[in-house]
Length: 367
Image 1 (cartoon, rainbow, N blue to C red):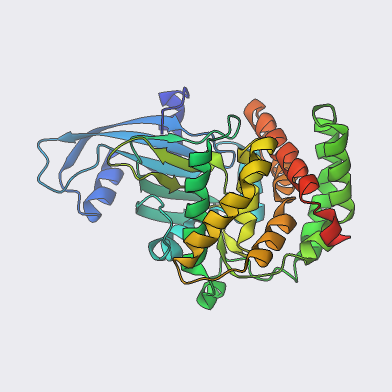
Image 2 (image 1 turned 90 degrees about the horizontal axis):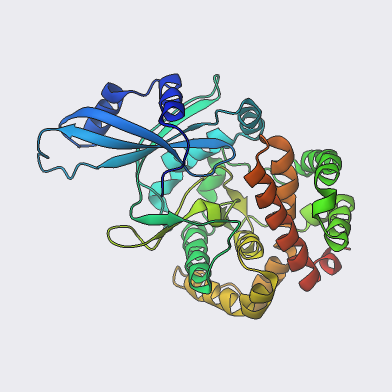
């Protein structure tokens, strides 16, 4: 991940607010087997998160490495500095879910995620601290630029690794941070989505085509019916599987792909992550041309985990999941703090999702 232009002062203030200093970090790393004392930490903001803040700390160790392969840097994830975004995280249990994923599930999944050195939370204060390995050398995906077909293939296989390694694991439903009561809460989600639609259309009306607005209005009217078609609980899904949450390795020792930002995991239909990713990562022409091949690649990788998903069922789930990007654009744009890049990102998501749903004739599966 490349350093953001955000100031060192802002990063230092975030660390201080959360009780993170040189001595605290030294103790955390010692507990992980990284011996020695820290002479200094040099913090800087990284990433483009809307709900959380990432601080890369470059570590200046005192004395030679005693042989424990001490890291030169770590990434510390914290609650957002924006009060609106923090309250959105509280309302949606975002921080609780991310802490829960890294604490309870991350060691058991096949998808590559950052190694976590420390995880803690203060639910009353709506704050958390994650100390993670710094994936280097790597470049973060960019939602606004899209990705290559090779990168899309890596992402699709990573999704299959996540889904295949959690397929049918009933014990996941027992975790207190997993939102497994999907059917009982459909009414709540419908009410929230419809309530936020008016603000979304008012804010972005001039940035959406007539076709994209029309699809949004259809989704607003038929949201209950659409939600009711997607009650499968096949596996753990990321829930926000998109380019901004992927790190592509650019050389040793970084892995080819690492998935981050585990703020929205749930049990659900497998192809949701796939449709969501492709609608927001490839332009419509490229997606139309290659989505069938990418879905075959996904099913082959899934079979490596012993999961056989029929082609017609995969295609049905994929078509039904097409509106997911539009839904996320509506919800996130109205709940988190507003930024210029955020506005551009939400438009990429909404436009790509609407085009995908039209191409796949998703409404015919719902109406």
